[in-house]
Length: 247
Length: 255
Image 1: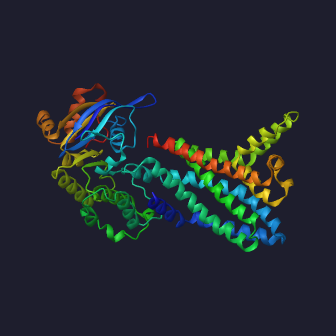
Image 2 (image 1 turned 30 degrees about the vertical axis):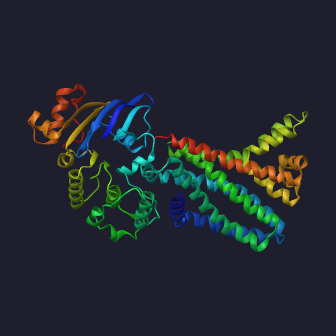
């Protein structure tokens, strides 16, 4: 469904993506894992049209994502840091996003809006929201238009335990309905619960891309954190220092 | 795009900065008109104030707005929107909010004290300057990744156009006084939107002594009618070119 072919992007001398080729399919929740600077963010940003790759192709069902911004109506994005215009009320923020996406969706998905009780804060100025509440608003906006592809950047960071569970539940439900989810998180135990596959990046290249269940049986470990740590120790001398946030 | 502009304007107008800007302009305008008693003096004082303050506020406010809205602009850029639509909506939103402040803070006092051709010209050029310097500010902001650099560049632009350019022009013309320089001086004048705005207002006033060297020369060269048309056209170019450049850069920018 979502295919990268020879995707390359450099920042100065740093190769953030080095001829990355990978295909992601419906019904997958792919966890992007790798050390800092491995290209996780650059890859997500290419999918979202925020970063322009120098070369290579990026397609959604065969149509290039690098040209027509209209294709982004099929993608939802939850950024790591949600910051909204300070004086806009939360309700107006939703109106604005609905306006931008007008005509681009058949149904809207308001499950999270109800789960997070966003209507209670609709009259608050977006600039006065706490970090966790902003995160909830970001999540609602990402899921609102029932997109076929969801890019979630550190979705659980800053959320209270109840909301984390609600969000995980939502991710699992949406994936079961055949959506593609692209996840980055430093909390591997969260990824363990919601991701189906791991795409491990190192220096802008794909190290491996396998289903989590397969990885677990191959390594004999039961936790994703332990799986990743074991693979990194055995595969790459650089990984003598383990993934810093592995749990 | 209009809807996004509307939300940007609404957001800015609910903030305190534009309110403060409006209040400052109101107090200064009423003060200047009541100080001398003569409305011409009041207008000249207001002109000097507007030519300094409007570019400065537009530049600083617009760059800071861009960097403060960066995460939201990024979120909008991930939506099914053209980059050009997104940036133009931000620029027009900021410029229109500043325009609203000027209409109340400068426009209202002028309507009360000096509803003359000169007064209306002053309102018109102050609005145009808001657009010119908002566009320049966004150009600086999309070029500089870092907030400090962007705001610094904006301040340098102000320093150059408000203070340095006229001095340099005068110095250049002084050095080259033996040559026929009418065309050159007109060209140098065109390179500074603040000078163009000053000349546009002063051409209505017939006080060439205050025009500065380039302004006086332009009046001699072009006369009032075609002078106004020329200056207004070049000033419009000062809006269009930075706007187009900012959009060109933003469309290719990695967010």
